[in-house]
Length: 165
Image 1 (cartoon, rainbow, N blue to C red):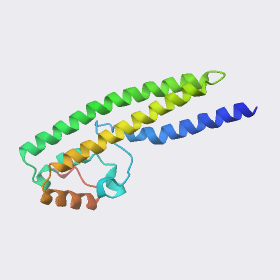
Image 2 (image 1 turned 90 degrees about the vertical axis):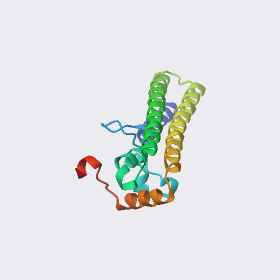
Image 3 (image 1 turned 30 degrees about the vertical axis):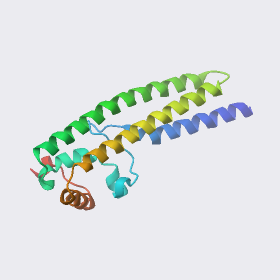
Image 4 (image 1 turned 120 degrees about the horizontal axis):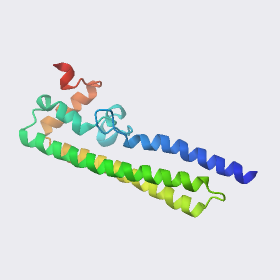
């Protein structure tokens, strides 16, 4: 009875942590990467979950981006999206592997632990890749452009260029 309770608690914890953590690697319906807000790089929590590279591209006129900056930002975004898609596929496979392991009786805790470490490593890699992409994108901006971006982020609820007309 005690073992069943422990296994149930472990399974519940894994499910709950998977729901919260996996949300950090999701894409919106239009293919933009979405992630948890963590106040990255000096931005408020509300702005940290925005796809910052896409936001820069959506506001290229407001930021006075050059054609070269736009091209570079598009490459950074594309590279990250490809990397993220691969990591998400790996993460989904590892989650399925964990589900299979947790259905076994008795549960092989050493394999469960290894799979959990793999899952967390993939989440870290995905999050770090996003942070690196944002850092690369921000490095392309001049001080004036960075200040304009900061002002846009502080406005909150930014309309996309499509909504502005």
